[in-house]
Length: 299
Image (cartoon, rainbow, N blue to C red; front, side, top):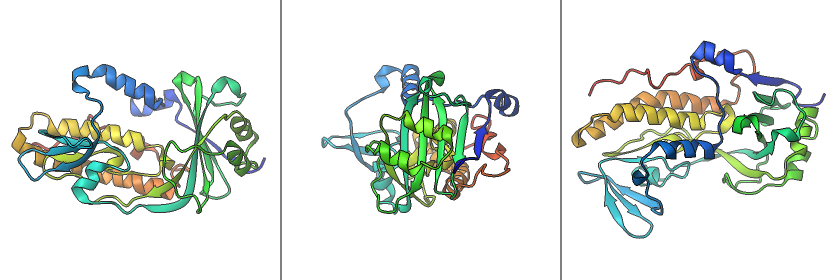
């Protein structure tokens, strides 16, 4: 059978509903952004403003833009990703550590392969912890997302959009399960990125500015929880600042940070170890978290 003979399929929808009160969902980033856009008043979205720095020394934080303009706000939230300009402005540059691993990403049409369990989140483990392939459905099952990793210490470029070599990908996983071979044979293109890890940051908030998502807790994707953590952050942050006056915002941001850091740090560390669900383990601590039900301390 070759490597990748151990096929782990996680969390069927009905089982998730029964245990956690909600289904397991996989969604294309573009669809998620479109859903968010439809829920927001268009007047609240301003494009063409590249933020490069934040000054929190005054009464209200001031954002500096790449075109030289500045503007003050009651609250600034840096949801600007792994290379966050807001985080750098508030706390200085971070020191990422290269894992020696690279990741490959691709999307194929599900109809192009005859493989079972395409409607599930499936992971094939390799002979060592650095080799694995994860697949899960997108667009209501019409597409299949593929994520694969391997050791490649000489490749150090970190980018989610850099093109990779499909033939290289296939050659690396040539000894994996036949189902994997069929899936990779259907890949027309692939992206490639080095994987870096960061230790949990000591602080997320200063004055009237804070960070969330990858800006606050960038993590390797082995638990598939990066976007989930950002959504949880947003819920807890929104609940923490609800009804706050301008003077109360800095304290509310510290409360949000205190509530979220233990969980995101645990997910960061678990993702880095890459052993979660490899054997018999309890998934409740990940999937059973309820950001809407979390107790928010009174200000």
